Image (cartoon, rainbow, N blue to C red; front, side):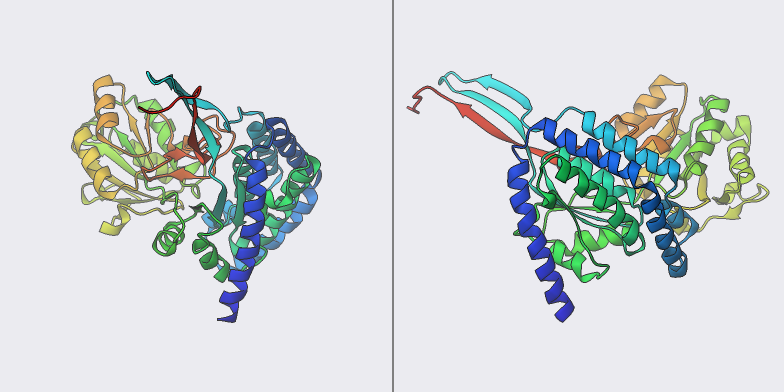
Length: 421
């Protein structure tokens, strides 16, 4: 009980400070927000050794905790990934500032002129696992959209997140913006998560970024509105009219480039006609790369495969494991995805325009692709600089959530002594 009270007090204090900061950020000039992000990027570059040392502590903690290789990969930072954080901060800094943008405007016969303009959401709570880069991505995007943010990183990324957060605060100070605009919960205590989920007086929306367990907990327990970011059960469907060489490149990349991200392919669907023409080449390519292939009964004769259990379809492995199944054409693929998918990302490999159109029209995942790797399901690759996550729900935001998706709108109505009859 004492821990819960302490956590509530902590989140109340942080929430009050965030609410005050959000009120100032709502009208902060775009150049100052840009300056804060540029200064934060410079701080990350200057403090590289400090951040990598902190990450080394987290990697030891993660190994002792028994994290899977894929989760350790999410946690790990190196010089290349730090450069990616710096570049992401700079990219967000240079983006168009969405706050105050006129979305639509019109005149009424009454003489009123009405505008719908973008406005910040207010205070955003972000709860995430493993990936310390989220500290920079979420902080940058929330700031760009004029929101204050309270970040609660995973226990395994505690030291890395603190080191990166210090750089974000340095950026705020340099631009004379309130330090409480980007706050990091300074404890591993899980009671702080529960307190955030109940902080309706302070937090306007919660964004969970992690596995099914975390997202399910947040959706079940939150009293604050939630942006749903469910697991990435991503499918690739190889159609009868797929180009073989394109298909081989895309399938291997989609599974093996990075297995621990939500855009990694988790299930390969192969048209029976493709299989009759080309055989098991796609599965054999994956096995050659070290992927454990769990396949349906009609593929179980392929050397090196394992029989798939029912639960392997609709499972986010986040590892060098992939399910595979033969289907009867595009409609068979659509039926399978509707049953087992998580509405994240699906890709069709085909040279047939009509088949691709049918796939696009009849599936409703947040992201649908053609002849492209699902690893492109990323806000940075969409030109957003970074993302706070991939929203799989249908309300407010879908797909990569960037700065623009972290705004709402209000109406500005102007008259000239206008009265209603």
